[in-house]
Image (cartoon, rainbow, N blue to C red; front, side, top):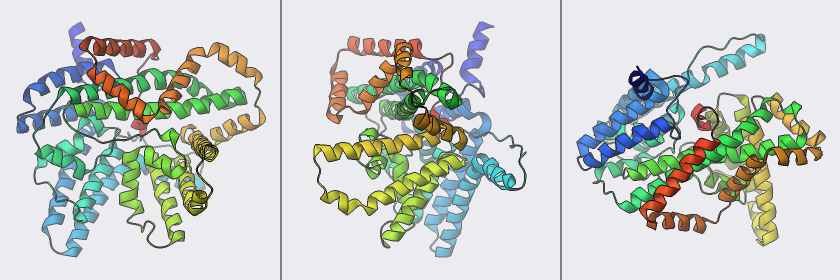
Length: 487
């Protein structure tokens, strides 16, 4: 019976327990997977089928039989891309493009936005609208955007469509980045499938380093500090302005460590298998302006929004006013992509306004110098603009966000600081540690990675065991899902 329970845990889908990179179950499965992979990766057809099968299994463990939506998207967009390439008739190309995008977006809209649109409509005429019971498949926003980018690149003749269905299915379902990115472009990934995989010790150790860094960010820092942050956001009026302020700083770090931690692990897992997913975060909280922030934060999404929404709308080619409009609309759509709620639209829209304002003052800002004082002011304003908008991103509603802001402005009692510092010492230590990691010089981070790669096996094993032990010690009762799973 015990063995049967273990088998059930490993191989059956549990709706309330999606498979997470930071869970012990995943590391057991991945260890088995990579041992077999190391024996077959030189046999192309074999490893393609093997990785696709594991990716499908991984997605099944995350979203159950909604796996077939992923399979459907793979088949339809692979087929439409070939049809777009084959036909010489422009009208037919546009019809195939429309059908492809309508199919992918139609599925995404149904699962993600049906309740949002119905609720927004019915709230105008009645207050008691009951939400429909629609499950949001994990990662659907990510692989939908990835598939759309592939078809658009084929339509624009930036790439030729692959004629190998296994290659396309591998690209779309590749498990390290399947459920929360990075959003990988076909032109960057598909060529890797045509080459022979060459695994070196350096690649494997670099991948292991990224996995350990990501595990520490997510499993130690983000998951632990989230426990206090959740208390405050659940009932902001029950806490002082100072405690609300600490929760905002805490969430600012939490979302970075959670999402960049996932990205680190995804990139590391892919690297161990011989694939390069690129970079997704580049110390975003060091940004000097909001444009710089979006060049550093969720780079794959920022790049997608720029290449497939901002530039097609005209970008900066049709005058300043239209550029500001395009920036706002791009981020408005980016906000809606993050979630079916007006607070995400508000969050994205204000980021769009921030980008437009920065572009408006760009020439003026370049003239006032670039000394330490100017850099500090620029960083400080950017950092706190981002923090302010995280309130709306995290809060359950505008009402909750308003209460948090009210408490900070009108109930800022620093007498609570002494009690807070006394009772939240581990929280404070982890927050300080997390922000130090966030502001490390890039050269230091690269040196640490080099030292790890060159270190003896025993040192690597010791570091691995220390981080695993820290995750066990600091985790809450259940392994916390990644924040971006909900998008």
